[in-house]
Figure 1: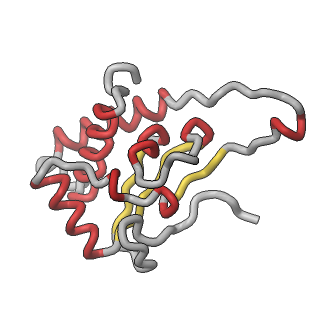
Figure 2 (figure 1 turned 90 degrees about the vertical axis):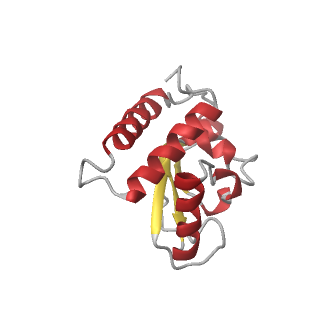
Length: 148
């Protein structure tokens, strides 16, 4: 049985037909709506948020024109993420928490590069710019920008 990431419906309106996806770092899950029961430290890799066509236009406007983050309105139950396997209860063993710092550092560097080169590099799309700004805003809001 595959338990990895799957395509999810729109995280804003639950529409199964999605048009765009952005990836965020696990710690940013704390900013999503209904995220309280999720242990972000147990997430492996990036978290994907999917958007339908109408909501993607709204997200682009919020991020690019108003400088706002859509994460607080996104439903965490609609995010696609992979959790680490938990055998601690079966093995009576406690494992170390995964270190999310390298992923956060990589996403931050990638986001800064995309923001700086948008318009000059034809390979950087509007979706890339929106994702980059959401990542940078989330890092700043969570106080991670200086640590990672």
